[in-house]
Image (cartoon, rainbow, N blue to C red; front, side):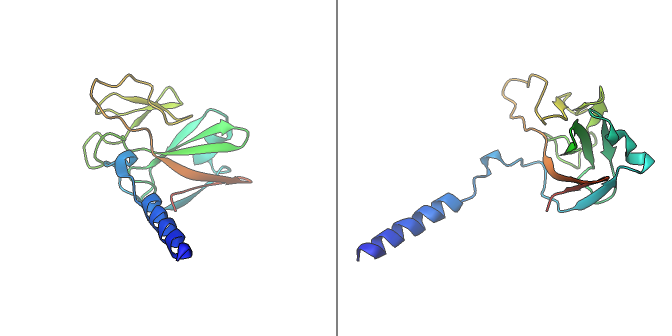
Length: 150
């Protein structure tokens, strides 16, 4: 009998811990599944051979509105969704623009974000709920950098 009670408590605790908390989920950006290989030997991607350099990849099916990739040094790369995190992807100004080489700005609300950490650099308007950049997975192997959201 005691074992049954312990089992019931454990199952209940597991169910509670598995409940989805969507309070931190960005409601503007849908989940997309993709994988894209960047060959650093190709001229199009060669800027990524320099630490602190970022590029935009706008290929069909890569992210929602494309992806920004930055070389953060020591063979590490970060990839971020190019969609403004506080706008719907279908809005006319939803794709961010690269500024200063390492930051992106959303033309809808003028919020600026760092590509080094995805954080907002601009003070948000009072009462605005502001989301950070959506990060994608990166893996570097030799001259190939794979970005994905799988």
